[in-house]
Image (cartoon, rainbow, N blue to C red; front, top):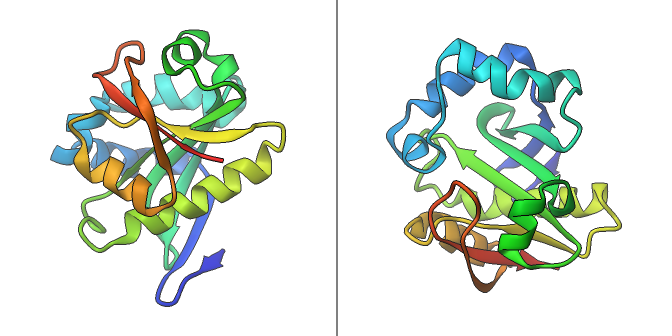
Length: 172
């Protein structure tokens, strides 16, 4: 657990017992807008069950905790394991991240802190990666502003598969 002046930020592996909470977050308007998830129990099990069970080794899922409360979901993956995404982003040696924070913490300035800590963790866990990359939708100003505050630099624009036009942000 990393402690900031006022908040303890931590990450723990996603568990099946978190699926009910995921469904709640996926129904929040801001999360649904950018993640477009299937919030049904079957949809969550289909997508996240294999990741929890280790049957999808390409993506590692985390629950974001602030002051010991679950407030979000984060994931990391090597771009090379997702070829089409890697080709769209065009940043060699990248480990990608995706994230969501619940509306419970929205507007409190925690996004940048969470993203900075998550990038540190991901780069520590994947020492052969040269850079940590996020690709928020160009229209998702909140997300890319939080990345900038967390020390990510805008690398350019990209079109990830099955996603809206995005900006590629990197933190080396």
